[in-house]
Image (cartoon, rainbow, N blue to C red; front, side):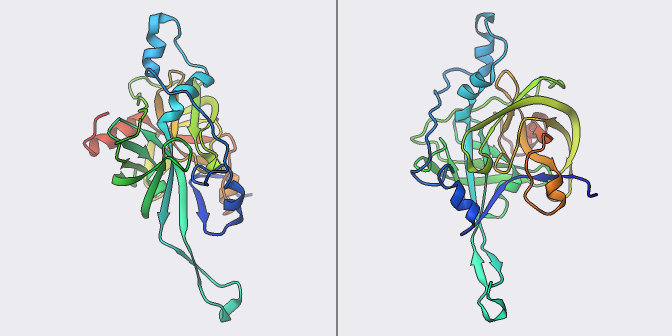
Length: 283
């Protein structure tokens, strides 16, 4: 019996794939045929909401979604074409298939800074960000820098003419096992998907795609799937306590696309703050 292993979970779409056709109606970059989800614009920060008159100390999943969904973006990273052998054997021509990876990102500030996983955008020539889950509202992003050993990357878009909703990064309050945890992202291209669970464990060690150890990761049972990479793991104040990055799946050990089995990992907010310090960025 093969043991399950942790794997990153970007959603990879190779040109012409049947899966891409199936997801076209709901993918945030899939045109005008998808269903539009309307989220009320956030008016105050989650921390301000929680502190207001002492009336509410925590957010329900609905409240967290309404406040923070606009701070989560869908990312499409287009890289070099993949070369595949012809289905007609040695007498056919080699086929070239464009590679497109999709994931999620977190708006950090009003200047257009966006945080995501390095494995979402690594090797990309073009990075496109969907600001509201609709293909009609996209922006081209520039890669400012990345740390593959922490599996984190920093992007920036031009904020002119758009309204951004930065999320709050919370590294000062230590998460506790059993506390609520909410994930918002774009699994399988399904924009602005909310899942909820708890913080299952603390101080896990996961491996970056380059093999480096990432310490202090959070474990959660909130459902994470391909396309959630780079999206936020939120506490019940609506603050970002981690960046969703990997799942543990027995499918991955068989060389197939990994799916949710209730064991997901998020890079901690403390690790994120260390990365932002390296980038000389304060949020």
